[in-house]
Image (cartoon, rainbow, N blue to C red; front, top):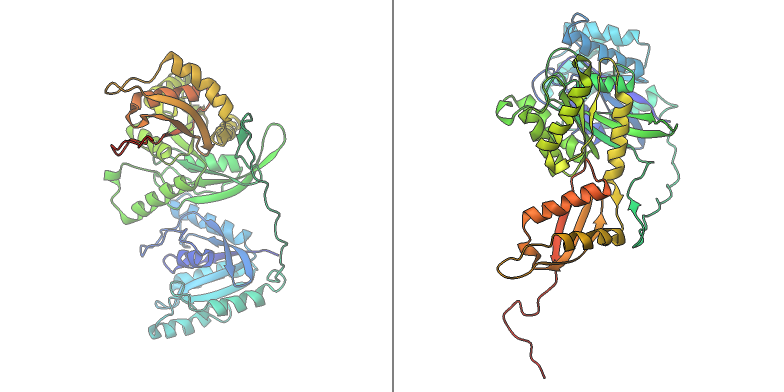
Length: 475
């Protein structure tokens, strides 16, 4: 039986370091600066044979509910409500502070099992702080070091004692092997697997409304939002199911990311870490939503972000957020779609969808655009269809001659999708102009409906037996 465990404590006691150690990956941003974590983050953790969900939270601080500090505390309190048990963490080197004592009362009122960790206890100087933790009245403190892994065995025993039923081990049967894709020469195919969660990254400039839109999609205040720019730092992945119009539910994992500013403007260490985390989310996503502020769309930074998505080979959806602020929406949408095609020829025809995270208008069409472009990204076109298209295209506009030699394209195939990847075979292909490759790319996009995805084309020539300048011997 699985369970959830929330890590609670004041800022800079090592909560994110412990989170990373338990999940076995460096998912949460870690820095010596207090208050790096703002949103709550969930991850799949394991200690030996115990598997559970771990929740990293923002540091507990006092603040008015309307302030950023107050909203961060509300997220932490929500994590306490979701958890089956609480890991209350203090800094053993600093000892018990008045803030620790105050928030110990908060977790005690939750009425859930509490495990007290005295972190940063790797040196003898922290012994007094470990003993001081008894004064909190939360039970036996565990001398712990999240950075060095000291105290993991004691934490395992404490989990067994605190949650005896949930920590029983059940061994699942081995899952059946998924059926492999088979593609005949005259059959189109797909690499789409609807049983796996669809990974989506939402990126954009600061204050474009990414977190607000995700909260609207989820139907709850899951992510920290506010008027301040740059609230989000960690790339937070949220798993949920979305029911489409035909009634089928699709598992999804959507990542909220930090706002991406121009590289020259990114100076602070924490912002650099947040930017790197957002770029990492793009690399691991299948569909990337570039969310624009509809009142100031297609800034230079927006185009730079789209270019990054194309280089990584991800499916693209352009979201126009804050659409409720547009006065003439029909005319404005037509203009912005024409501008998108003009400014972004590498993904011509990418869906441009108006949406409002504040009011919820356009969310259904926005999600359908994500599903549609994901299906295109997974599409494989049969060799037969490709070459029936290719022959008249080459006949109508043959490749130009280079240095008196005619470039000959024999045939084309698509060995893989995600994104669509094509290989053309022929002679003298090294001299094929980029303009002609672009001509073939545009033809593929328009003929087979490959809108919103980058297209890759590689060339493979036949070997010339006289390439080394020697003649074959004729008998």
